[in-house]
Amino acid sequence: MLYISNQNTDAAFNLALEEYLLTDKTEDIFMLWRNERAIVVGINQNTISEINIEKVREKNVKVIRRLTGGGAVFHDLGNINYTFITKDGAFGDYSVYLEPVIKALQALGVNAEFSGRNDMTVNGMKISGNAQCVKNGRFLQHGTILFSADMSDLTDTLNVNPLKIQDKGVKSIRSRVTNIALYLKEQMTAVEFFAYLEKFILAEYGDITAHNLTEGEMKGIEEIKRERYDTWEWNYGQSPAYTYKNAAYINGMVEVYLNVADGTVQNAKIYGDFFSKKDIKELENALNNVRHEKFSIEERLKDIDISQYISGIEGDEFINILIG
Image (cartoon, rainbow, N blue to C red; front, top):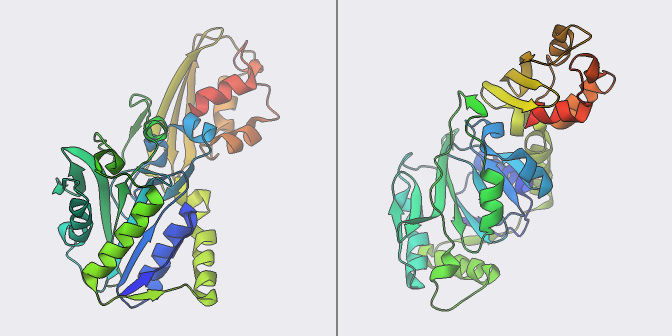
């Protein structure tokens, strides 16, 4: 088994690295890694329904889609992630590769245990969510390990009004979460815990060879990152079809309904008791085939006087209704 030494903290790079190791390497692999602040959504999820868009923008949190299923998770430097990639693995059985992590925590006096479908808990509180995928005969299992994550960032950026979006994708089931650091008898930093976990698991498996990424491997990883994980099409556009609804009272009630597929508005309807000089259908048609995100909508509407269609409203006020 190879141990990949990886100190990169860019979420897009690290997910591209996972894909490269899964598809381009043949050896069994173990890796620990951390990300700067990011939300990582499951492959089957509707990205928009999983994030609080306003807080994500305010806190400059990256949003990246991964190859595995399961729910959206928050990453920061207080969260350690693990990855195992092997030639075989029992899809649906998470206990095998969680066992060394649980042993490492128990050795620190933390009462960690496997729980439910794919979680690890301490005293009933979730400290780890895990996911799997199989690609070309290769098996990948990875998971988060909450050590000292910023819980305010976690709850702020994953919060969303459940009445706003009724989606046809897979919704996350959010559990009560906690940090491992709270349960340690002797305190350590996230960096120290990372080093401890690395040493413990390497000793547990024994026959592991450390591997530093070569220049050629880095080139392949950067290509995957550029073509997939840096793109709006992958991170947002892959979302299942959904219906977006929002309303606001601005010199009258304005209600917006958007049917969105592949992240792009397919049909827009605007209702309300507002007054208008021009036919509202013209404004509805202007929203068709635009990405459901702020920059694209601003570009589409920049030359349109919204007040001609909805009396008394400014363009930015209308855009805020469209994106929540």
